[in-house]
Length: 335
Image 1 (cartoon, rainbow, N blue to C red):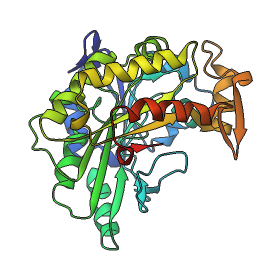
Image 2 (image 1 turned 135 degrees about the vertical axis):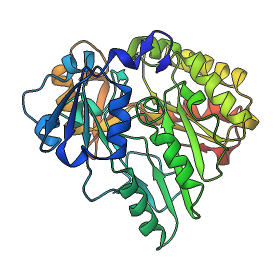
Image 3 (image 1 turned 180 degrees about the vertical axis):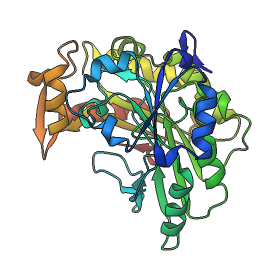
Image 4 (image 1 turned 30 degrees about the vertical axis):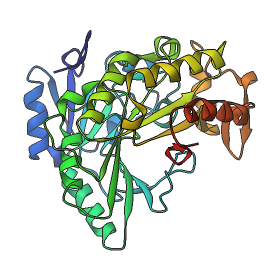
């Protein structure tokens, strides 16, 4: 159960909290079998553990616990404005897992949740049923891995595979599975599905080493994306968040060249550019506790309609667009 070199899931999850409603669920049984030495703790409701006050998010990241729960409605949420919709009007996301294995300095989840523990909603079938009902009224573009990294978690619970198999049975549905994982091998046995876009978030090594703890190196992510493209999957590259680090223009220009030296441009479905941005309230909350990183330096930021980003946001977008336009046609680049 290993996601990348030097990082084993078996080092995590010494305790697993299980809602009483989730005890008899097949997914619960599957997960508990994966962690036979974990201490099982029965609880009434996942929020009793996940939402309790005065938790230390940073300490919990060093030793997260699993929480198995039954999700109640709603199962689908309208896509937020700060996220790219790739030209889709009916843009939604689903959170069948809350929180991520990785520990990126810039992650908005640390400002969204009190807890770094990971919640798995075991009633995945109810999510599928909600999507099916939504499709009765038209097409749907659905992101399934915004509040987590499902591919990285595939060794714990095979939700990435389940979503892919579900999408293959539906018309008018497009699913984006976004990841920083190199764990493509976990789904490589599946036949590529036209309704699924596999999206890899990529950053320069200078950014990854400094701000993306526990994330697989850029090279292994690129090789995973390349293998997926060669196997016939629609592969999206997500150049985000673009950070205004020292010498960022040269670093990101060299980075784009490196990406397309590894992955042929004609094998890429599309790409998007996202300059670092975050909800203002989440930004303020995180900045009070993250004195160990310069990501949240107020002097570099400005607020626009409740969203924090760089004052040079526009110039940074233009620069990144020009770099990508050397390799991809205009219609494949989203900003």
